[in-house]
Length: 128
Length: 130
Image 1 (tube, each protein chain N blue to C red):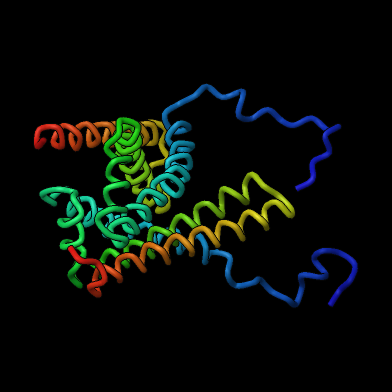
Image 2 (cartoon, one colour; image 1 turned 120 degrees about the vertical axis):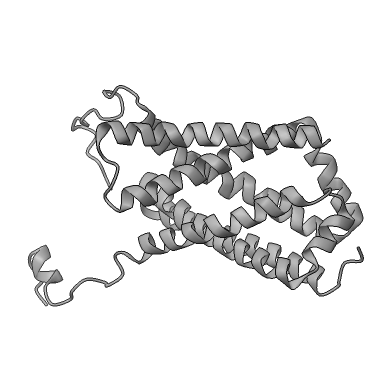
């Protein structure tokens, strides 16, 4: 491994082989969002009301709970990728690293809470 | 990146005349960040309240149906459709299409027409049903 110039250090190591991974996942989750959120918005619109009983009865079916969980994973993943780019554009050094760590805590924590809530309703933990 | 503040920075943001494409570009970022914060918290709150039981859900509803709740809901509706439309525009631009000046400008304008029209339509239907 060369120790002099930058090119010397890079030579022989090759790329990290993950240059487009983030970009590509952003697009894949975008396509997923398009499908899942269209379903979600149309479904919400078709609900007769937004009272507790109606909402709990709506979620209490695998054909609602499963797409809802997929939507939560997809949405939180998509915005985790997006906000990472925003942080990388405007923050540098330690602030950027701390920001991305907090972003991960926020995205994973929020998604976990949302998924748990759906599962609790689905598995009958909430009397309608 | 550390910048030597003694060196001049070439003017960029300040020297361009604003156009729809610039507006839509920064709106995509703002609407995305808005949904990732306000939208995501509202979604988690709604689901957690429903899972918690009728009382927690009532608390959520009382906030959501207070007038600032409606302001946020109408705002999020527009933000959602705007981000969706400019997101689809980005997927088209990713293929290398739509960079001609006229087409690019029209595409940018179309996203804002789409989001404003759908927001108006959705809330008009909600008003009619109530």
